[in-house]
Image 1 (spheres, rainbow, N blue to C red):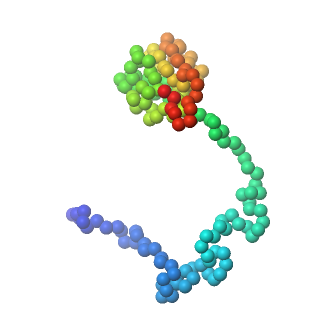
Image 2 (cartoon, rainbow, N blue to C red; image 1 turned 180 degrees about the vertical axis):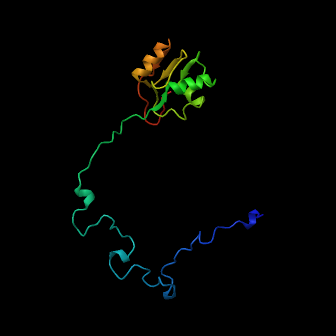
Length: 163
């Protein structure tokens, strides 16, 4: 039986790094594996995308796609997940289910730009939801059970969360 003070790595698991430029006896002395003269033998080399003066390939190829910097990052939750939380007793179906209540119940980790309810899963309880966004199928499913969905108006300012 070994104890904590006997624990060590397997043989060869840790390899000592090569200390370059530490004398000719090391095998990596003098120029330290950099060759002789030229840009790459010196510090501060900026040659990664350099192709001998011709236009680099990353500048020759056309750019593709588009990234919308104003797109809102919704935190999505399905009706099925909400129903599971109600069945487990984490959410009260009689009270209004807000975004904060979903986080508190552990259904979501955080609100992000707002909570978006998706229509997947089966909802059997009559619920009153207060969220930032809901899909058409989610609205239909909630209204079918006799519940209501209140959509919060406006988008949150930068740095704020919709609450």
